[in-house]
Image (tube, rainbow, N blue to C red; front, side, top):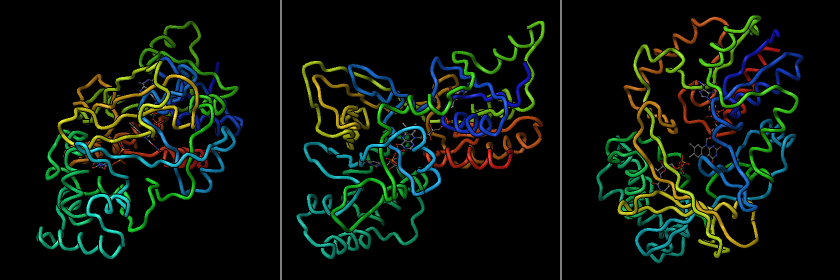
Length: 371
Ligand code: FAD
Ligand code: UDP
C-alpha cells in the first residue's frame, strides 16, 4: 500500500493532522506505541464514570477556530474548573482571588487585599523577581506563597522554588474579584462521553494501529515482501528518542497516578480537583472524576497524583525548561530541520508544555500549509 503520511502518535496532534490530511484527500496511517488512542487525554469508562487516566484534563481556549473545530467531534458540557486548596486543616479557593484573600486575612474589599499584598511585597524587598519564589511573593505576598505555593511547587518540580523559573507561576491568574474560575479563557468544558470518544471521531475512517512503536513498525514493514511506502512521516513522540539520543537526553518531570474505586462513597470530596499544598502530604492533588461530568450514581473513582523523578523509559509528562534542556532542545530542533520527509509536532516532538488547544491549533496550522 502507498500512503501519503505515516503518523506516529494517536494523541491530539496526530489525530487532528490525520483528520485534516484525510479530508484533503491524502491517505494516512496512524500508529501508537500505547495500547489505545488519544495519547495523554485518554479517558476510560469505569463504573459508569469517565476516568482521566493520565491526569485531569480540562479543555479551555480563547481560540474561536479551535473551539469551533472540537465541536465537530464532541459536545462539551459547561464544567468550570474551580479547584480547592487544602493546607493543613485550612481550605482555600483557587486561583488566588478575593475568596482566597478573605479566608486568609478576613478582608472583604479588593483594596484591603491589595494593601496587605503590597505591604508583604515591600517587606520582602523584591523589586525584580529572579526566580519562582520572588515572582510568587511579588504577585500575591508571603502568606499565599508559604501556604499555597511553596510546598505544592516543590513537590511538583522536585526543586526549591528559588531554583525554578518564574514563568511557571505566571500560568495562574491572580484576581481581585470573587471569581473561582481557574482559567481566563472564553470557552471551557469537558467533552461529554470522554476525550477518547472525541478522538475516536477524529480518527473515523482512518486506519490506526495501536501497541506498536515506530522502530518496531519500521522493522516489521521492511521485512514484508512488499513493504508499505510513506511519502512523509509525522512524528509526535520524543524528539531526542527519534535521533537515538545522539546529542544527550532531554529531561522531564514524571507523575504517578494512584487510582481508587470507592463503591460505598457517592461523593468523596465534593469537587473535581482538590490540591494539597503542604509539603508533608506526598501527593499534589486528588481528582474525583465524576464531578467533571456532574455525575450521579453510587460509588466514585478518585486518583491521587504523585510527582515523580523521571528517568529514560518512564512516561515523560512535563518538560524541564531550564537552560541545559532548552539549549539541548535547540540543537535537536536544528536536526529536525535537516531530516527530509519527516515532520515533528506535539508536546513531545517540540519539547513544550502545550495545552490541548495549543496542540490542536499547531496541528491545524501544519495541515493548512500542506493541503
Ligand atoms: P500525546 O498526547 O503525548 O500523544 C503522543 C503520542 O505519541 C502518545 O500516545 C505516545 O504513546 C505516542 N508515541 C510516542 N512515542 C512513540 C513512538 N516511538 N512510537 C509510537 N508512538 C509513540 N492540557 C489542557 O489543555 N488542559 C488540561 O487540563 C491539561 N491537563 C494536563 C494534565 C497533565 C498531568 C498533563 C501531563 C498534561 C495536561 N495537559 C492539559 C496537556 C495535554 O495533555 C497535551 O496538550 C496533549 O495531550 C498533547 O497532545 P500530543 O498529541 O502532543 O501528545
Ligand atoms: N501551583 C501552586 N499551587 C497550587 C496550584 C499550582 O503553587 O495549588 C503552581 C505550581 O508551581 C504549578 C503551577 O502553579 O506548577 C502551574 O499550575 P497548573 O495548575 O497550571 O499546573 P498543571 O496543570 O500544569 O499541573
